[in-house]
Length: 504
Image 1 (tube, rainbow, N blue to C red):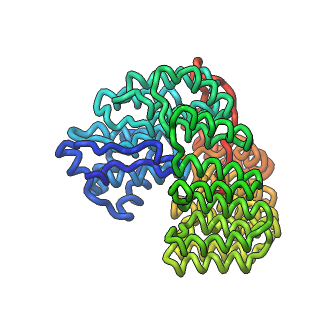
Image 2: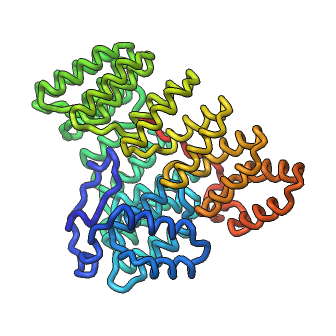
Image 3: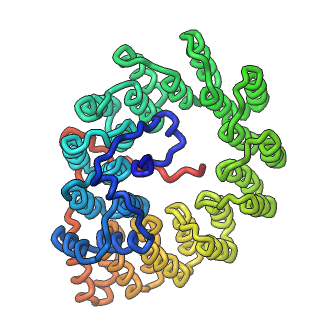
């Protein structure tokens, strides 16, 4: 039954322990497993339906039973392929309005993330209020962090805190765990100074715990400030745990203070707090920064000797060191070793190589690696696609760019919006208007709006080529998207662009 509620994957999940929930019989029945084919079928319906009526009719006639697991996967696909949030919301509302059906926290959080990413804050709050009336238990501290993270990107700290206070009427328990969600958001989206100030302002309304201090400790960039906060935590009678020490080691590693790193690890062992995979991954990253990739590789061996077996993140850190040193043979050797140990390289692993190949304009190895990635069943993420499409643009490889685009359309990976901007630039530069028109229509049929810049460029070239009928068709296809999305009056009207995906 616990499998029904799937939390968003995050290294911070330790701060938000999930409490098992009791489900009604209808919800239990709605958790039946779904197949990848069912997910593909439903996702195509959702992404290609222009109207609510069409969506409902298509879903009713497709013969697929809409379970919690299936809805989770469809929304997840929509999120990572940067799907149209309004189409996803239609699907979310339609499935949620069925009698006896309850969405999971995963579905709710994913839906809120997509709305927030598109700055649809009013709709985001509408979903939360409706969820509160139907099943308040699915609004979790993770939900608080998802919502606040999107708001904090474009709003002031004051407005973010005001939005946090609204959750007092929404969540089942407005407690320290929710407070920690706010602090985590401010550390990530604002600054440590902002997080610290809010902590001191609100700490008397909650009961700060060890996780509170770990969150604040994890945001420091200065070793001196981190050390001071670490001592303050001890003075308050809170004993550091492995997370606390990992935060300190991370600060030292990023500041290339490896002697302090090893002293902290000795202190941990003296206190019988054993380093974990995250500890060693920080150390591996730090050794790479000081130009010691071979010593970092030895850390992987040390991990095995003490029974703390490296995971994909640890191997990625070691591979990254060799990629930075341009020792691709050693990097590839570690990738083979990882696979021989039963670990599967993820998109981040491949991106480490794509980055090197992009900067060296190595088309052959980039394309070969892409083929290997697809063969292994690891779908590229947006960063993978951007490395590839930018390389094809630089080398004017139209055929390869179109093949990548067709794979994206068929398999549903990557950001159509980001990739299409580069693709349309390439096609227009090379005079491939027919191909540009085809890709444009494919994108619109998937429910994604091409950027205004791309549309204007294609429009000018079509006018010069006297393709008036084709231009009229594209203009009609763009009409349903309407004007650009605006923020509500109460929100900051900043147009800050979200940061690129980080290499982890």
